[in-house]
Length: 576
Image 1 (cartoon, rainbow, N blue to C red):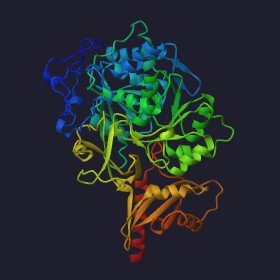
Image 2 (cartoon, rainbow, N blue to C red):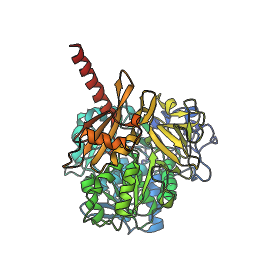
Image 3 (cartoon, rainbow, N blue to C red):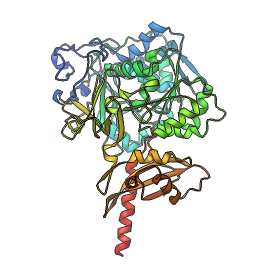
Image 4 (cartoon, rainbow, N blue to C red):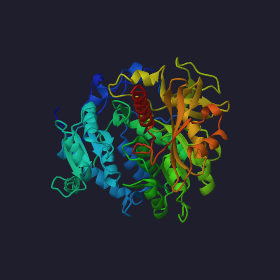
């Protein structure tokens, strides 16, 4: 690929072949894109496989030409000023919006002037959650490239797969996270470290551009690809979800604006890393769109998160249900008076956890469901509209319904598949699973829900987490919620185990609170007092911890695999 002859000058391809394909319902004749590397555009699904996008009121509308990096940084400075705090680090450091823009512009100069990155190139971003990683992401946006942010914990094999799928040639990587990326041995990958002391370190390169002046953001089209977010790939080959410049603003202008309702004086914090869209939205896009500041923590487990909330007077918190449950036992002595907004996503929020947090803090957790394919939260509720045990209602700009396997809408009260559409939709990177996720113009998230007569949506289970025992459909999360009402149950995960007589039996994996001496019999008695007999676990497995992703999402499939292996061992012993 030939480098752009003038990398810091906005480009616009002149012919129709350079246009981003739109969804079938969208008007033809879009403005030409700025990407000279057209890989991302060329590997979008064909238009007929796109979901129907909602781009009219109440969904936000955007001009044809839009660079989200410019909007989130330069436009925010125009509205709120350059002296306001933007990024905070755990050690007390603070970057103002002006300092952030200066760093971002210098990094963008390095990308285009030194490294030869051209609009449309994919740039891998890897490292712990720090202000430098956030600045790199914004620089990639302003340079018109495509960000592929991955977890610092990702290993060489995973990194090699992602680099191969997205054809990545450049990487900006925290110096502490370079080893695994180098071990991936990606052909042609140019790695530029940051946070180190080597002569090629990004900070040193960026300082050399102190006299280069402001960086003029590349004049990208609103519907050009800005981000490829990879799913965790825990159950198979990872899927790259492609999102556009307008998508990054749409999540801020729907969920954040209408449900979260932040102010410029808010301080955001949370546990999800920027490599997950839950964290990217909650810890970077939302606060910058509102002119607020965000605390970026390298270590954000519950034991680190709680003191940080106090020290930095955090007012908006994003984390998973498990973190809220864990912090409940550690609240004494912590002043959370600054905290006004608590958001939960990543997995279902049990009603027991919601009520316990509300009783302890007076705060109402904003429950929500989102997806990497749809970028962020699309069903939620806040304040007095919250109903414990319910996920909520479609966020303004989004629509949702419950359908059967043929896509037909089901009556209220009947469980079925959740179907969603809005201003953002699933567009997999050259993946045949596109037609599994998008059907009849709707995104099917893989979740089983019930729509109540009043329009509220209630989570039942992941479609593959439904346990069928003796003809009964049993939702694992419902059983987990009952277990978590026991005061000495710290964590719970419920899965099905194959059973010759019943098809499956309910198995509960339980983590007890420290010092607890609960037995299977005592827990069984508790469950029988709270659930119908067919829903009660027939087997209890006591664990020291449960398998979770880096963002705290429960990996039930690992527990199911362990049970199947145990069953195979039992069969082998029976036959011996």
